[in-house]
Length: 73
Image (cartoon, rainbow, N blue to C red; front, side, top):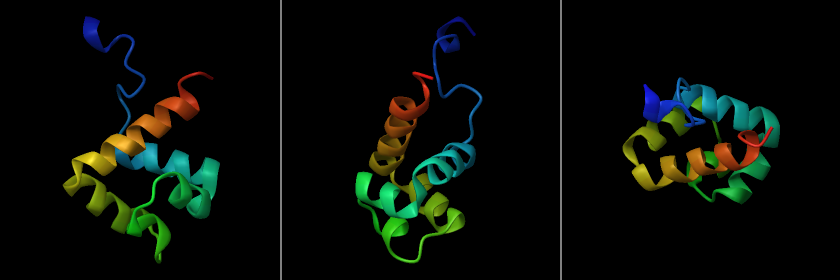
């Protein structure tokens, strides 16, 4: 538990992270910040989650954006 103490992603699901980012930025801005097809072409939470779960580099970018956006607040 000690190493999770300062982890801003601790206890957050990928779905919750994505929903918060979409609520904050919207799909257009999110697709601009992280240029992946599931954000830019007919975006949905489910299709984006499928892609992010299979694509570690994209998931990392989403997690980094989440930390940059919400961890400072």
